[in-house]
Image 1: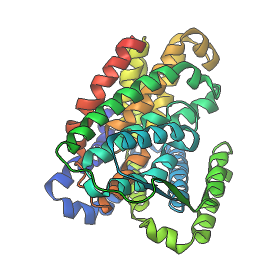
Image 2: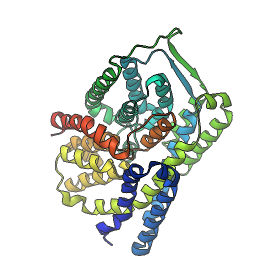
Image 3: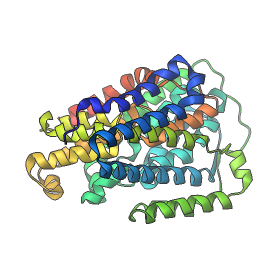
Image 4: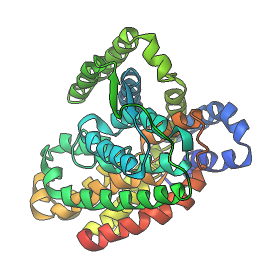
Length: 408
């Protein structure tokens, strides 16, 4: 049965709620967002099952949600037991170095792992001048764009690996585009950071500069989670949950206390993404049914359309939808696609990863970083403010350059 566009109404209401209600009454939203997300998610599921009776799609989405929460939840808990202190003065160049290192390591421990590992140290380093742009650029670079080189970096790329794309294929084909994009976003960050420091006196720092690392045993649990990514469901999720429980139990309370660790950020992500996952089923099915009619035939088109939808839909199924579209349009399997039109795969991959930075809901770590920084006292922009003030003016010109130079 073909899914009509109007069946996506609960999903549209979910996105509008996240975007608009905090603008109208922020305190009401903070208190009541669980009721809104659960109500809309349940409404979407009931309507979908009543009208289309597609229990298989709901079950498949439930498994994806379980895997999603198991991964980001376990990484949240384990990295919460690793305490990094960067001792020194938060100069623009030091901040840029931290962001670059975060972008690199996101390819080894995932964007979620890198984000949870570094967001608190980054905020502590800048504790005397916490500004919204610091969090925004952290989301741009560490939570999204950085993880474009390996299947571990971002969930859609791992799905591509499972479909048959070789592990190091992306590194070979996109490293120069990745580096170009990282450098431009870092240049934009330095502009903001130097401008913010203009006229301010540098704080004196009498201590010894360097990095202090506590909770090192949690790196073993982190490695266990990353290795579990390659195992089937439910073994993968059980290992991740087990690693999180062991990490939380064995980590000294003093580290959690110094980390200001609590479960509120992951609770917020779990509830909001329940609403998103539950309501997005008809939207994704409509997209999959009509993707062929979009007339996609160039890497640039795949880049922009995959990216635009990945900013608001879960980027993993969106990635798979357009990868299937590319194969279907040419009558090729994944190996034929990699040989004959590799730039199409590059466009789809970069669109899915890069555009996750466009909104708070574009990628799982985004909301977690926002939630942690909210509790650290940062006055982060609203959903629309983030898009209008930062992602549109900063990222879109850079993505246009990426398209013009590499994907036309």
